[in-house]
Structure formats: C-alpha cells, structure tokens
Image (cartoon, rainbow, N blue to C red):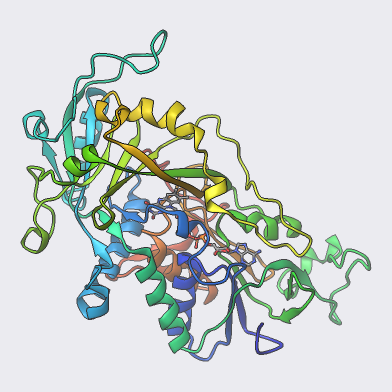
Length: 462
Ligand SMILES: Cc1cc2nc3c(=O)[nH]c(=O)nc-3n(C[C@H](O)[C@H](O)[C@H](O)COP(=O)(O)OP(=O)(O)OC[C@H]3O[C@@H](n4cnc5c(N)ncnc54)[C@H](O)[C@@H]3O)c2cc1C
C-alpha cells in the first residue's frame, strides 16, 4: 500500500507506457512526489505480458514512424550503455521484418519507403530470393476453405525492414521500473484504482450523493481539480494530478468522470507452435542483411503474409509465435468482469480464442506454408491480451482542465512507442505544448489530442 497520504502525481498503470512516463517525468521534475499504482502483482503484467513485443519503424503514418523510430533509437542507446541489456538476452534484437507482398501492396510499400526519403530503412527482396525459404509456396494453388472464398493472393515480392525486430519486454520493464525506483518513485502493486473523485473545497460545490461538481462550475475550470484516488479496498490517497496509463482498462476509470478517450479494447490472441517445419524455418538464412550482420548474421525474420498472418521466431524456445491481424467483427470491450473490489481478473490463457487457430489462423498461413497443416507443426500454447484501438491507429494523449491526463490508444504497437509516449506525457504534465523525442526532435502534443488531432490514419496495423 502507498506509504503516504498524498502525492503530487499518481500514475495508474505500470505497463511500459506508465513506467516510461514515470521515469521521464521524474527525471525532469526530481522534486515531484509520485506514486505508480497497478492492479497486478508486478510491472508489465497487463497487455504487455501477452504481447509479441516487436518493434518496427515501418508505418504509413509519419507520426507513428517518428514515435516508434525515436523509441527504438532510445532502446538501442540503452543497450550500448548497459552490459546487462546486451547479454545474455539483448533488449533489442533487430533481425528485421519481412513483408511478403501481393501485387496490390507491393507498389504502396515501395512508395512509402521512397516518400520517407531514407528515414524508413527497408530494402526490396525479389521473388527468387524468397524461394530459398523452406516450405514457402509464393503462389498457392488452392484455398483452404474451399467454395466461395477468394483465391489466396500470390506473393510477388518482399520488403525487408531493417530497423525492426524483437524487444525483450522483461528487460524493458526491468529497466524502467529500476530507474523509477532509483529516482524515488513509489509503487503500489496488487492495488486497483477504482475511482477518481473530486473533493469538496471551499470554492467548489459538489452534489451531495454523487460527489460530482455542479455543471455551472465548469466556468471555474481552472480551480476544479481531481482530489482523490480511491482503491478497491476502500482506501485512498490525495493528489491533484493523475496520469491514466491503464491500457485497455482506462475507460473504466475515465468514463465515470465523463472523459472520452476515443479508444476501445479488443482481445488479440497469439499461438505458439513447434515441430520439424518450425525448426526448418528457424534455420533459414534469408538473402537480406539485418542492421547488425556482423553480430548475429542473417536469420529468420518476423514474417508478414498477404493475409495479415505473422510469424515471430523465438529462437531460444525453437518456436514460432503466430498472430493474425484480425479487426473484422471482433467484439469490442474487455471480457473479464471486475469483482466487487474492482480486481481485474485478467487470465491470458483463458482470454485466448483457441478455436480460432483452426478456423482463422491456419487458413491464413497454410496456403503459403502448407506444412502448418501437417503433423510437422504442433500448437503448443495460446494466450491473449488487448489491443487498445484508437480510430486512426495512432496513440492518444488527452488532457483535462481538472488534472487528469490519459495516454494510450496503442493500437497494438505501444511497447515499441512507449519511450516516446512517456516523454510526451511528461511534457504534458509540465504544461508544455511540445515534447522532445529521443534524438532531439520536437513534437507538438496536440497532434495526438482529440480536440486538435492532426494525424493521418495508420494503414499498417499488425
Ligand atoms: C497479442 C498481442 C500482441 C502485441 N504485439 C505487440 C508488438 O509486437 N509490439 C508492440 O509494441 N505492442 C504489441 N502489443 C501491444 C502492447 O501490448 C501494448 O501496446 C502495450 O502493452 C500498451 O502499454 P500500456 O502501458 O498502455 O498498457 P498495459 O501493458 O496493458 O499496462 C496497463 C497496466 O494498467 C494496469 N491497470 C489497468 N487498470 C487499472 C486499475 N484500475 N488500477 C490499477 N491498475 C490498472 C494493468 O494491470 C496493466 O498493468 C500487443 C498486444 C497483444 C495483446
């Protein structure tokens, strides 16, 4: 439980975004007392714990590109500086993303890379180069589902994103959590934030029963502040600044205050497979050069198929994690019901849609990798977390006049942008109009707001 009765700022959520926010804020404002609260028993156990934790700077939106690219650069800097983030497991393993593209997308991706003026580091791979991939059938002859389904699109080329790869999420969390502790940030785990409330002060009148301010006091917006953070066990702390970085669960706290985020959570499953065909794929050396060829050579990259199915190599487990971009007719919302004490009974294994492996995932993978339908690939495990989707696939940063900020709306790419979002949320706290990304680039905060939003919809969501 929190050690004090009151804090200058309370951050709800010890996921990557809340942790990065705590670190950057504390670095800039060392005298600010800060509490980070999380319902789970340790940091990074929300959707981050279920995540693929991949990183890429290939986005159609320039804003997403900047946020991810600057965060990746920061993670690389950390690795250079700290031995424990290089070995035995590297914080960032930039083995690349390989998009296997149908004709329809080929030109679009090349244009995107061309328009970036070199900022997106990606190289084309021709069909001949792809033929060495074990078991890959670039032009599938049949469609898994039989009648009525459109034929699978032939792969006509590949695009290899070099500044892309895997993050070790446990190392990222350990770094931010350790830094925050070192800087004096306090943490309360196993503690659910159930309610943010205003408190009666001399100048503010509250409805007696709901403890909400009367509407006419909107005119006093500057003086109306949040005052208390209430926990599931009935206790509370005082504060007048709250940063909500609660991922898919943010609306539970914000909606009762009338704060809209524009975002909605949707479960997203991952499937871990192993077997002889997986071993063969993991042994493939593609004809492309990752950013650090001298260190690790060319290895099986993160592969994205024309259907949106993707394959992540997990070399040390000799497994591949299979995911599927799946945005049509998926129910919106979080599935677990909060108990009476508001606990988030979040069970990643139970949340997974196991049946979808056969009905949705295999039909999206097997036309291109027929061995996935044979006994040479075994389904080992399945789990799920939430994507917190914004309508345009870009993050959201919402400020209110009464001291509550929301940062999130990761749309499935919040680990790779966590550092940038933490810096922007810290700048928001300080009342600035611009934040500074790692590398020095200035970024206008209201680009990610709802009221003055100024971003282009993201087209590459995985
Ligand atoms: C299957 C899957 C694959 C993914 N793949 C990738 C990927 O490859 N790359 C990538 O960058 N991202 C990926 N993501 C998305 C990534 O997990 C999220 O972007 C990231 O976790 C968002 O960080 P966050 O800090 O906002 O939220 P979270 O990591 O969910 O953290 C939020 C925290 O808030 C806490 N919390 C919520 N409500 C309360 C409350 N009321 N009281 C106290 N604590 C509370 C939760 O316990 C949780 O710890 C994936 C997600 C899933 C599910």
